[in-house]
Image (cartoon, rainbow, N blue to C red; front, top):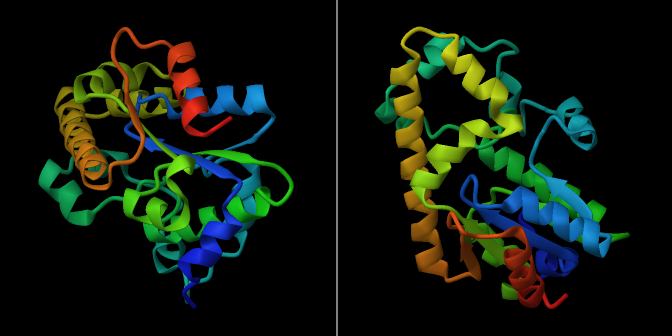
Length: 223
């Protein structure tokens, strides 16, 4: 069953979406907006308590990719893949669900949460989906150039396990170089999406401040 675009837009009218590249400021700014305006803060971290119910109802008939994921991952084999192999597999953007399946769960969760309060959603939704489910003044794209992503990504507290895992493997420098190239290609893809769909967007620089970008977001969201 496909839900019509006008029904989805109406059901998500109280959700503000922040998307974009890694290290663009999505999480920081969505938390600041939630704190200042009393919004619910939603992010796409499937380790969050509120998402455990979705993991418990996975059905192979509907969620084929998620139901086949193994409990343990051979990280040596996973990170030994080449850039071309990663791209050929189209790896998921969620650590738990194949991406299309994750989107279905996330949209339902957002509809549910926004029934009682406005929500600011820190997500990795593709732009072609966002323009179908939300209006212009509900969408903001937070961007960072590839050099800032590669410089800052591994320093984040919530990414410590990622970098520690790679460093524990054979030839960590080579594996890091592969991940950095994937970051670069992902950033290029996101910038291309912004060029195509022309959403409101902010590009982070070394001089950017949270206060400055928060003020611009509030004006865009009409808060």
